[in-house]
Length: 150
Image 1 (cartoon, rainbow, N blue to C red):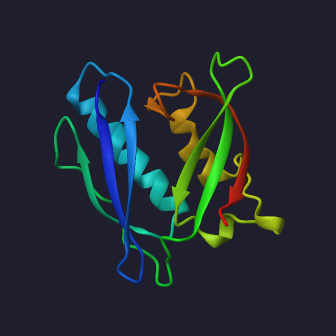
Image 2 (cartoon, rainbow, N blue to C red):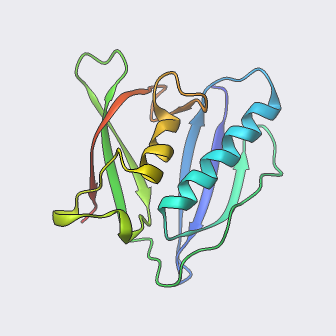
């Protein structure tokens, strides 16, 4: 396995949650750092939670973007589903902790093609330049749904 980006996020109540994302293999250490920093910036755009810690299996020294939002809550999240690349119709899910309320529409629907959300989800799309796996070494052909967690 090429490595992982591990994030710790905190809500305004002081509660923490973690997110672990698998890197695709890169030739240069600088590429891992660039991809990790861009992933965190894109995640920060769509979550109310503050990223308080970030580490990579490969190195440390990542730039953690911005602070959390007052009223943020680790119990609130969004789940996105997409079609797995070469998965013969199989789907994979990806959860985003602390999804911002501004991205949630009627009936709890979150549009995976909406600006900042699409930018973040593109990190897992096959052929994207950022090269993260959604799970088990899989990439996504297309994100099809997003919803607020219950």
